[in-house]
Amino acid sequence: MSKDLESPYAEGVSDWDALYRARGDEVSATRPIFTGDIFTGVLLPGSTGKTKARSVVVLQHPCSMRTNGVDLAWQVLVAEVTNRKEIDEPGWTDGNFNLMPLPDIRPDVTTQSQHQAANFDNLYTVAPADLTSRIASLSPFGVNLLLQRWVHYSSRVVVPTHTFHEQTVAFYEEADLIEDWCDEAGGDDLREETQACLDWLRADRDGSTYQELLKNPQSHSMIRRAMRQELKERNRAENNRPHEGSGNPVGLSPPLRHFE
Image 1 (cartoon, rainbow, N blue to C red):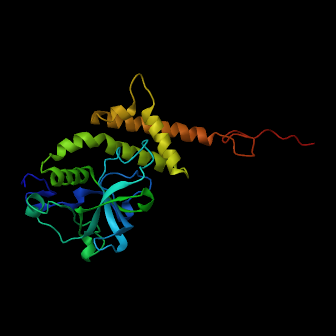
Image 2: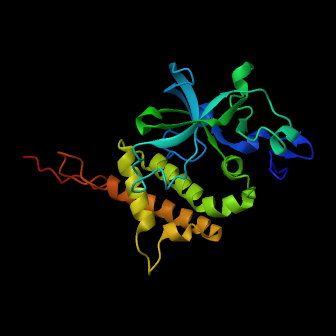
Image 3: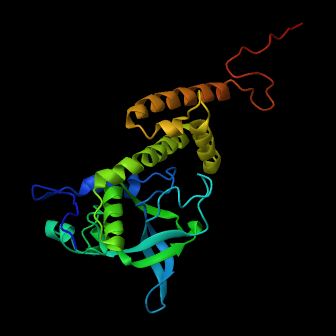
């Protein structure tokens, strides 16, 4: 086994926060399910055949788990997540190869469940309907570490996290944009708003699309500005639509009434 695995340590000091995008109440319900998302309360059998509520982490690439960019495939590959004591730096770089440590995944508690780990020996495929209680999402660095350890355990090859980042940054940014779009749009139908965002990202613009441009990080801020403008225009159009039964557009003066 190689000693070139990376870790959230710098000069011997751990930085657990660098692993996570959101934990607990920080997790957004509008964010598309992504690699590295951790869910709890999933009913699954164990090695003895006993079924109980378990926690899992999503291992699949966001594209491979979707059929059309929106709807999840009928089964998603996950690994079981269980309580695990905090792992030191050598434990990250030179051991525990079958694990993705998830230290401080529950920073609000001091029990054994504060520190957990995903076990690549305990794999499942689960129906998307079972992934309802998301308790954490990994940061780009966390996702890349997960992929590095998963690929290393499966192939004995160490791929630098920056290589994974080059391949995942566009998809991570797309998930961020969809989350922001859905939060801003505030619609009741999350799938409909997700599809609307994807349609906007995939629309042809002089032979290219914003989705394709996401592969270049230098385009991200420009696309975000364009999205904010698009949402403003959509909200303005929505506000100017006549209210049902009113017969009068919002923002316009009502017709004059004549009194005898």
